[in-house]
Length: 235
Image 1 (cartoon, rainbow, N blue to C red):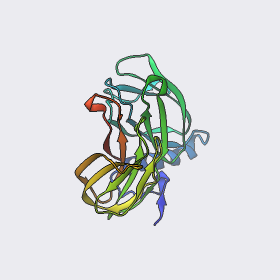
Image 2 (image 1 turned 60 degrees about the vertical axis):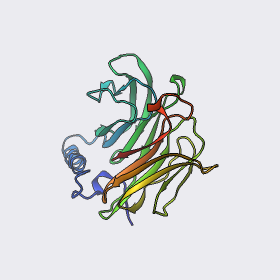
Image 3 (image 1 turned 90 degrees about the horizontal axis):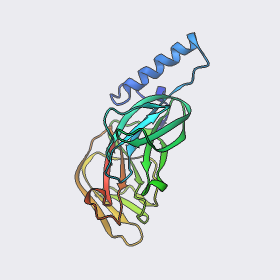
């Protein structure tokens, strides 16, 4: 099955990608007529995987992207950005004081996910992944990431499916894999001990859609909202 990684190669029939593809095609056709030196367009989504109480604001190139603070576990849907090395900054929501500023590299014509990660302010970081999907109308695309800073290696089980999402240390991830659409039960396990760490039941994995299922939070916290658990984020 062909892997589609370029914005312009994805089917325009997909409602998920239609707006971005149209914008990229329009821009690319116009830049050839007007200014060939302008950089190509990339797409980026942002997920807050930093287990703190206060929401964050996200800035790219000095411009705030979000309208309201991004709470732990929430996301900003894909937005367009020029390719290349882009300066990214996060602050506590409503504050102008930077918590972390660093460059991230974006490749024109590709989708990216940026995860804000870490356990403490000193460990705060960005994990940027290129989102390389498999185009499908009858199956579901699923990727697993371990974003729990203090957990051991973890595995995801999709009950009833034999596809493996095993043995991922902190910041490690699987490629997107195609599985059957279902009302699925998801189990998060410690790889070494096979201990169940969390379960999500009756998760609606819809055919033709794309999901990142990720381990979030901390094993050592006493704050319920920040405890180790599974999160399903749709692309």
